[in-house]
Length: 103
Image (cartoon, rainbow, N blue to C red; front, side, top):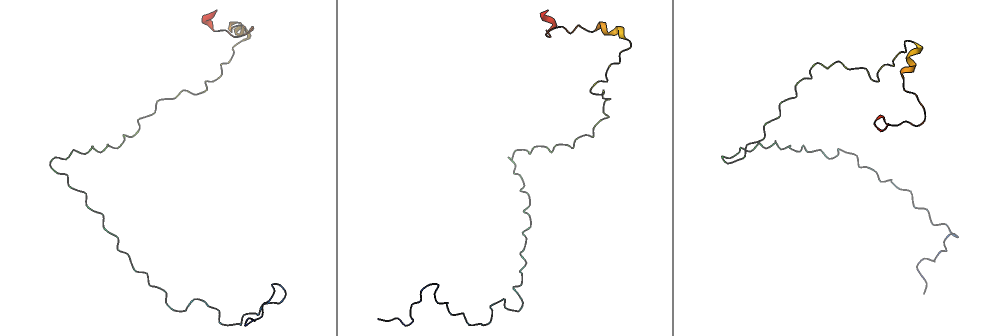
């Protein structure tokens, strides 16, 4: 039994090109008109009943900062040696450091 069209092997015979025609595109004319959506008004706050718990009081605004205390410079300024004789007052750096309470 033969088919209405002969079978073609893939890659051997090119397929027939489609006939040129009008390219489908956007239909000219006015588009859909946007419908304004009504925004619901905010609901009023419910009125508390006679047995309702009292609401927390609103925190008062923070007080403006008071005058700042004078700050000491940090790190502290290096101590200037007055003379070479003051070096003897420094502890001797011999061996490993030990805590003063264990000496």
